[in-house]
Length: 239
Image 1: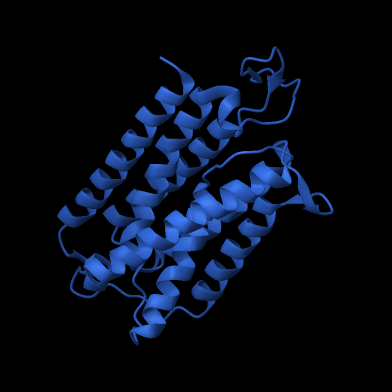
Image 2: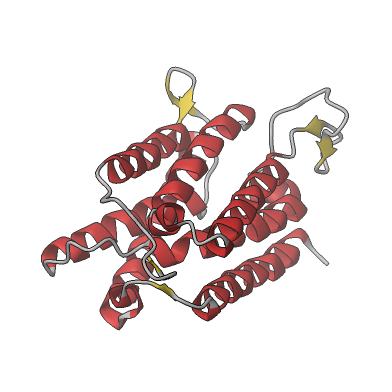
């Protein structure tokens, strides 16, 4: 099976894993999330923003790295989705925080999806820079490189485990603020891995995705800093 075909298989697996994670959360007794995040206009805005962001930032990074073509980016999708939903909420007068139900699906989806990037090889342009470390991987050009896709997959899997434990322990603060926690965590680990990728720099040593990671982290930090206190009442965690 070709790298592109394997990537597609894992993309589908990532969406399925995210859906299973969302279904599992819906089965946890006493756990509730804002209904707005399941309304059709909300979902449409999210999908539209994420899609636009994925292609704009993925393609720009490709061009800034001196390569032609069109590409997609997970982080671009996150940034686009954030902007689209914040605009949607502003236009509709929604002050409630609506992202909590997406924390676990996001972590699980990225953890699985990055495996597809790993198996896709050089064509995916998500591989790392050369390394002499014993776990360096040859993606097909005879050079050992950082398997940054696996670094990210493991990092997000670790967050997923952390979040599941928080749900099982009814940790209301983590459940309620889970989306912003996963964004902060994702942005931080992504910022680190970007130093191990052969992407073109925009400002000093920083690539487009370094800057995008900073945007995601700042957004998450502001939302966490201004978050209302969360508490569990009558064994019900509302997010």
